[in-house]
Figure (spheres, rainbow, N blue to C red):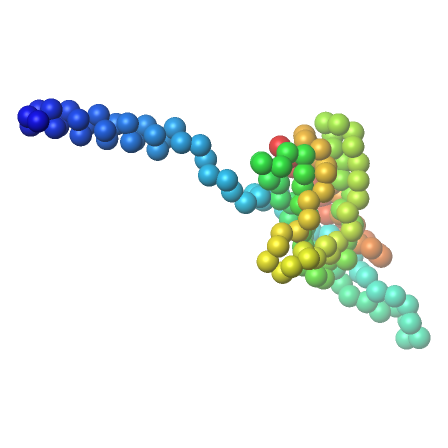
Length: 142
């Protein structure tokens, strides 16, 4: 093979490889954070012989969506968030509520997904007892 043919072959091969890398499909990814809802502030606890006692709640709820699972959302928070996420799919009119904390069955596994439907979703977060300031937010589920 002549030198000019080697250079042409190398250039063509390099261009084909570069195009293949650019045109390759995106790798499968984990669910992405769609939004973090504004903090909910409230209190939880019960009444006892000493009167009302409980814990202050000042938590934010994270919402994740998975492009490979359209119409589903995951809600996560810390173990101190005794909260309820009331969501409404503005696009479809579907509604639901999810009580937190939701623990994965295995520590390394993800939080469970809930069928919220695809479209624009709005949510209000309250505590399970007394809510001083509700959390709010919205996201788009694929």
